[in-house]
Image (cartoon, rainbow, N blue to C red; front, side, top):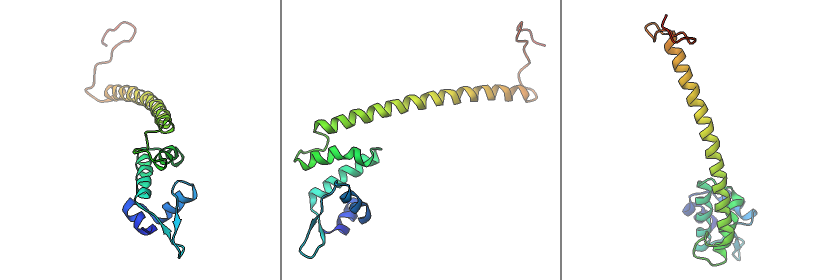
Length: 137
């Protein structure tokens, strides 16, 4: 198939395919008249790349998966290098989740403080309490 058909079937653009080719991820064979020629295995490579990118992997992180498929493995993640990328990505995600949890907790505390302060300023809000002895004024 030609580049336009491959792009349409993969849900991407010809420009993207040429970029993948320039990065060595998508091989392009040439026909006698110079057109790029692709087959179903190339579509499989593209689907692997696109799926991983949809999950947040950068283009270079897809390389071991593509190489695994090119080596004839049934799945792109059945090679040791691919598994190492998965492990590294999980570590990055765990770290980001930890950072986001810390930020979320901080924002939740700020919201709770702000809501208490807002209630105290609203007429009919809670009675002021002496923080030194706990007595109501």
